[in-house]
Length: 193
Image 1: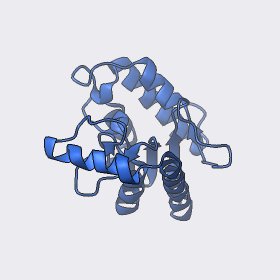
Image 2 (image 1 turned 90 degrees about the horizontal axis):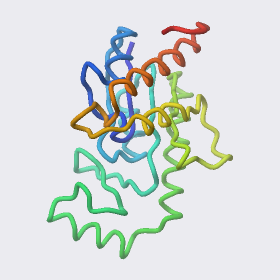
Image 3 (image 1 turned 90 degrees about the vertical axis):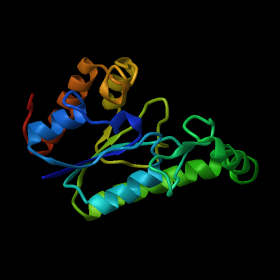
């Protein structure tokens, strides 16, 4: 079984304590993808299409995170965090000449719809993790929409040096248990862990 995690830094780092590896080990699955720092919705879509998992866990992004194809991670149009000194001018040019928040939302929603359609067309079981602070509009219907993963992650935050994905060990274990239960429910199992 191929298992992929797509999205931002909440699902970007692996270790024995990360929910990524806890879920993968429990399922005996091959982890085919993890998110990236400041991962954009477009990167999630492209990585999903390249890796073609059996189960996809998508941590949906925010519209201000911009796909940067020539880098290992994306950038935040609202911040210079993570940019190299020679990239600061790029951010200024983007914000001055190309940034439109409504267009950014349309890009985000379009990529989210394509993720949903790709998973439907390829029979990929998808868990759509959405942050309640950044909900999608009601007209955008996602299957298996889940707000609990991000709620757990936000209430169990720590420094990235202290816990994988910036989440405490307890938080990682709670997210893993929730994801395993969601996957088990797909198979008609009431409770797995």
